[in-house]
Image 1 (cartoon, rainbow, N blue to C red):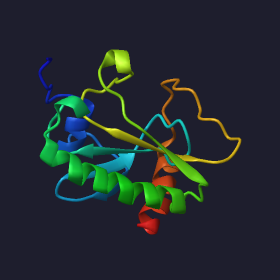
Image 2 (image 1 turned 45 degrees about the vertical axis):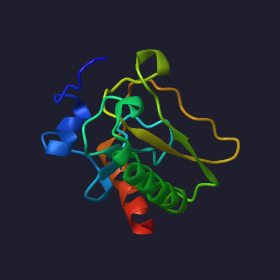
Image 3 (image 1 turned 90 degrees about the vertical axis):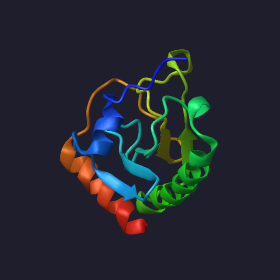
Amino acid sequence: MAEYDPENIFAKILRGDLPAHKVYEDEATLAFMDVMPRADGHVLVIPKAPSRTLLEAEAADLGPLFAAVQKVARAVKAGMGAEGVTIQQFNETAGGQVIFHTHIHILPRWTDVPLRPHTGQMEKQDVLAAHAEKIRAAL
């Protein structure tokens, strides 16, 4: 099992070393806009406790994480006027994980609107800020 790297990008966001468009925060979790969204309003929810993958996370951290995922997913759906949401979670490189801090993707969905491919292209900051505001208002 690989060791948790405290210099991963999400750990830096948690420490305030990197900026993020925050949507929700409580004592155990942080939700913020994905800078490379696959859908307008794509949000990430992370535990504040360090863990590389869901498989390595402490069981006690999972309840608060998924309570936050549910709360934020409801706000994403309402705030973005979506018809549904896709919730994704990846573990290890072979499973599609790129950043090794446990995280959950919440993607608003609309009928007949496919997810955008992951191109690595960053969204404009003003667009992320506007989406974050809509979602925060729905909380």
